[in-house]
Length: 474
Image (cartoon, rainbow, N blue to C red; front, side, top):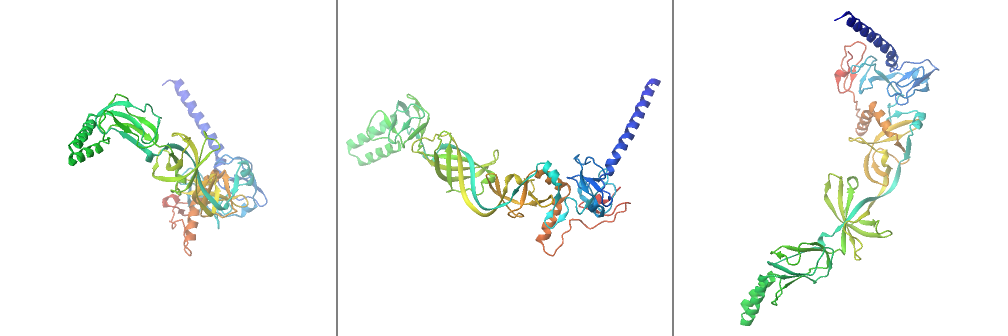
């Protein structure tokens, strides 16, 4: 390697060392400002609205979320004693003394009784400065109670009533010599001749009947008549056997043309009676649990403005469509004038029973985490408490909930996800679960922390949490 190359290597190493020293010098203040220190009485402190454990004696930005620190009176903080220390990246692990986190290369953060997330009789609480809440655009709504009318609004499509479909088929082999119905959509009446079929087998049976009558043999007459009944043919001998319509309706399928050869059992055409039709309604899974047959339904069609069709739920299908997460319900509507055509779409409203004294909140207030359903209750002085609820029916942007809420309380409907994230970071849900268990078992104290284990590392107390080794500092 040449002297010039060695010189370049030395210069690069020196520059890297200088840059590393400068970075360590600039980052050191930020690492230490994670640890809240007592302030002089009567002074001020700058803290983060989302992370109150961050305190410093001059303005700046939060080292955790980057928000601008806000000014706060430091007198209460000067007298406060930490409840415990924790790693912001592992908030479920608690430590009795300050020091460096055994998980991350950062100082442990103290937890004070007046910080967000402290336990109160109402449950875990997160505190946000009112000015910050206003800047974040947080909105609340009042918890209501009263009568809730169960109602589902969905889209439905008109379909043929499958109980009013008839298939016309050939009973014997032959040829279609005359076809009186020429196209799909033709209307027919019950008893109308649809086609003339030349069937040698039918003609032979008719001639046998005539010959038996001539002989006067009752046995032969009876046998010939039975054969004609099986062939669904008349008793008079004629070249063309008339095929008649079994019902009034519309031709929805035409399978043959004039001159075609047919075999026994071959379908010739399909008829549908449209005087009554079905409306297949796709009901969301979350609104299908209270559906049942007999409920009143109203259907409106854009192509028929101002007209409301009333019917009732005829059947609720037992299967769920896994692709759309909907349950199909069937509504029967009268269609005497034929205005409803299969394939038309309509807006369907199905009315259920009324729920009395139902507690309701805006649907957007409910946070669905996958493991539980939570709403954020807004309390006084910028305090917010997560409350677990059980969701029920929903309609028009409102949802019925049970458990944990009272009428008149305020729940957050905008910005609640920020509070939920902060509560999760501080382990608020863990303490909320412990408080609920303690309330459910009077006289028994439920401590989420396991028994302390001796810690031989200097500068630390006992670690708490599911992982006992997590409490030991290196």
